[in-house]
Image 1 (spheres, rainbow, N blue to C red):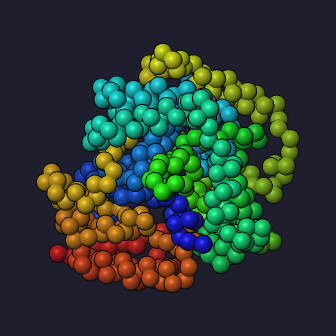
Image 2: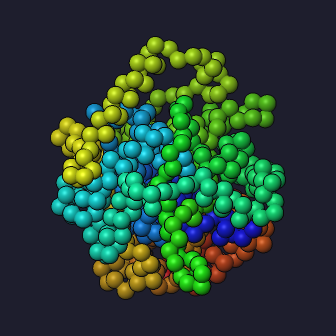
Image 3: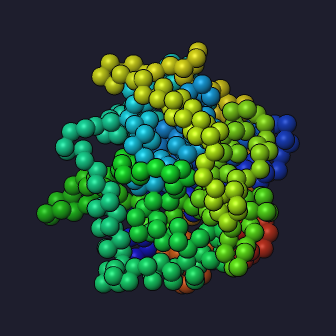
Length: 468
């Protein structure tokens, strides 16, 4: 079982929980914050930045254009106006498209129906500024925008050549990863969970983790039929086939870590860590639902989400049949969501709700997508030298932690490096080698570590500070 076969060629999710990155900045809080993220893989930190109350400019560099497409789609979910979609529906739609291999048909229909709007936003800068002004795609190359357009069109395609059989593709990945131990897969999942995740991600439940490892389904926050392939998880890689390099389209993402790491294994609400009879009363799905709902609410209202968590799975309320008020609320959500179907794909006429297509978030943030593969070229951009207050590396992008890239940082800036403690695909030797590797890179870059020099005690990230 190789590491690459486990975490995949395309990382759809992060390997650590979401954090407000501005808390790691040391300068005056009245000044704008500029952040550069390398390989964060999802929007978890961006949503936190949108709730930080700070003026933020964040540059995002990902490894695949499909990830940028998902960023755009999920941002459009978060910023849906309340006249088009309620808070509960936004949360469920976000989690469904974010972490499930098979989604509700209505969820995929949302993405398909909005494809004309997404295409117009990436091809028309003026339209993007008028509909989603917080996003800036001007730094992307034209050929990258063209490729993103083809990705969006695949989401909405109905021809036989565009079939995405993710159930078969997921099973093939699991078989390739487990090899002759495939028939005892659940025992392997149990071993990964017990040896790596049980103590480190205490809110993660084995049954939901094993279900995701087997089928790729993580969130079922509402009773429904999850039978539609999530086309946003499709990507292409170059493989040798018949002695020639060819583009292979399929599912090439993570099959060992899970989407739960981003939103479902941490909460500041201590009551949600309650354990009864050695069983968590909350699942990671419930934690993720509350966390994402809180973020979406604050982004759109500018206020903290103060509603108490829903009843836990063992409470009396959770086992009762729905009341008439619940049924009427669900019917209202469904009626509102039907407005999202008012899109003519052939004429490329996006639906509009009220006076704007999306809410204007109650925050001051600018999000800029950088061209792929430009990490080594960024220090050559004079306009970016001594620009950033914080530099964030995902665990898979630490090789770019070089003396050259630290030239982009201000004198009092910090560096965050994602921890690998939640990656069960790493063996003991690989895990033990991670910290010395980072220490060596930091010394070369003239950076010193903040906090303890212990991988397990540094909860989500390793922190460093420039010393020159």
